[in-house]
Image (cartoon, rainbow, N blue to C red; front, side, top):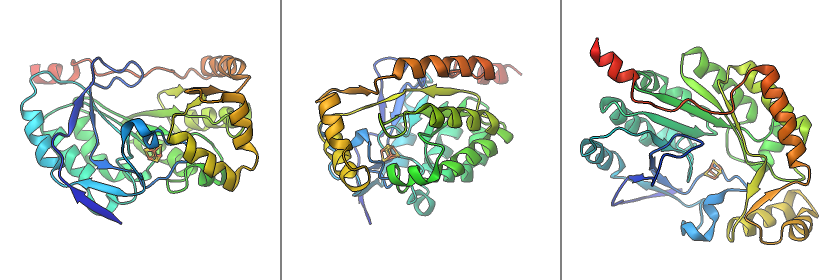
Length: 289
Ligand code: SF4
């Protein structure tokens, strides 16, 4: 179920370039997300999104995007995928993300897509066009185990499908990698899981892996997570209450050891933990010729 809404704007300018993801503008074509991840930060009260399973589609999104991009004289990377997933199942039918990418390609703006949806490969034709300027696709992967992913990210593509998506994108020359985050202490923040993700990401052709080995929780997102714990992870709610209270950032007790192990493995495998950002050179060089 979904409903259409009108939006006043479609691009939000960040105060400064995001240092992890290289994003200057954030673009949300939907409100709410079908993927249902139990840790989703979009449920935090501060965003006032309400029930995120109630999907609202910004019906004037593509027209707004055309107008807003036409008014921008300085290019900056458009990021999508932080408050909702641009490749949630509904996108297969509505193609709002696809239409927005077509506009972005026509306007030669750089893009960074963050997703858990294999549907992104549908748009490889447009991503290749955007890639003449700059295109990055990050697949978020929090567990290498499809069964565990089903519990913590119930309606997203399987983890195995996300690795396959990286392989497809990489073979097509699209710059892509993994955002290895968040990790829920006591659930998926163990070395076996982290090592599996890293090795599979590298084998799939990822160019980078950006790790964050904990989870952020706020009022709203914490309440939902605790309810989900009662369903599938008995006793975990009490453990979190004792260990983290109302902390915003929640790390497991051995997170420093895990970061060190990651760092050693990244060095051994020769994989970067930082993305290359848009620098405004590629398309300028193209225009010279
Ligand atoms: S895909 Fe992202 S936005 Fe959607 S439910 Fe999961 S964490 Fe939230």
